Amino acid sequence: MDILLPDVLYADSHHIPLEECSKPEYRMENTMEYLRYRAQLEEIYDNYQGRHEHNLPIVIVETSRGQLYFSSSEFGRKALQSFYQHLTDDYFSPHSENGIVREYHMRDFPLAMLNADVDASYQKEGGTGPYRFTEDKGRIYNHYDLGREGQTLMRIFHMRPTAEDYQYLVHDRKCKSNSANEAICGLLKLKTHGYLRDTILNSTFIHRKDFLELSSAINRYINSGERQKVSSSTEKKDLFDLLDEVQLKADSILKKRYDVRGHRSLEKRLEDSHECICIGGISLENEEKRLLLKQGSIYRERIYQRREDLHYVCADLRRDKLRISAMPLTGKIYKVENGKVIPLHSIVRKKSVRPKGNGPQL
Figure 1: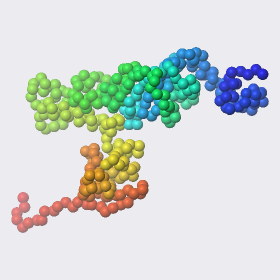
Figure 2 (figure 1 turned 90 degrees about the vertical axis):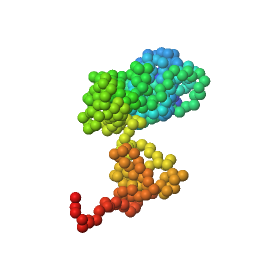
Figure 3 (figure 1 turned 120 degrees about the vertical axis):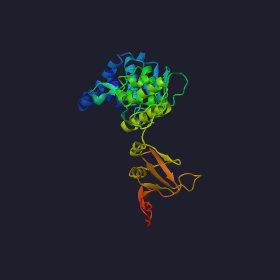
Figure 4 (figure 1 turned 90 degrees about the horizontal axis):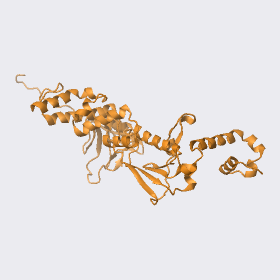
């Protein structure tokens, strides 16, 4: 009986006896499934050019979500670069990778995992489009305990939401940086350092007009040593005041026009059902976040273990912070128990009215 290698692989993957798979009747009944499997084999053969010996060493990328495996073939190198480009594009996204990313090389990789998991994240977009990194709802990440023996650490990326860490990833992996991330980088630099002339005067910095007046005032102060006035202020300011204003403006633009991981406004954090906000070591429930967004106050029997007198929480969106108090705060007060909202009493602060006297009014 003559059996082709693709038939052997098909029978093994579908748990079918070889004798059954080789029958013409079986192929006629399962024509489309068999043809799809043969097409997949031919695609794999073309991707690796039929030379599986070049798969080693295997590149292991370790993330907070699990491990990814890439071969050292041309197809595997493209898959690895596609992953790093995806990491670059989503770098500042609130739900992107926020843990340390490590890249290891390993030669003694378990052979049984080569076909199943290596380069599995590099798939055709929509099944027919070009190849690109695809997270596939997290199913591509593995959690095998391979140990560190035989692994060589090649790269490490800390993934902190800073301009320096982002640019290190871009330059080290030779990734393309989009305009939005470049703008965020410029704002992060100004927020951190206060004033960078090259950043503000860079023609590609899309927010340069927001800082040109402050930049001119800082330059005039440096040249003259005298306090300067800007249009947004009625008083003259020294150098430190101007630097603080640059930092505050950069932070304001970041929070109002973008949604940057590690630099989100309180309002955006409360709107996000996936964002974890803890008070006294206990996460806010989504119902509690919704109430705080509506400028209501929430009541908790205990917020901190060492402060039994604190019970009330409200959101100060203008100052971008939560307020915790021992006394009831202005507005409606609610308590959330088992996902249900229970209204408590409302507190209304009356304005004090000064009694009118009989004397002359000024």
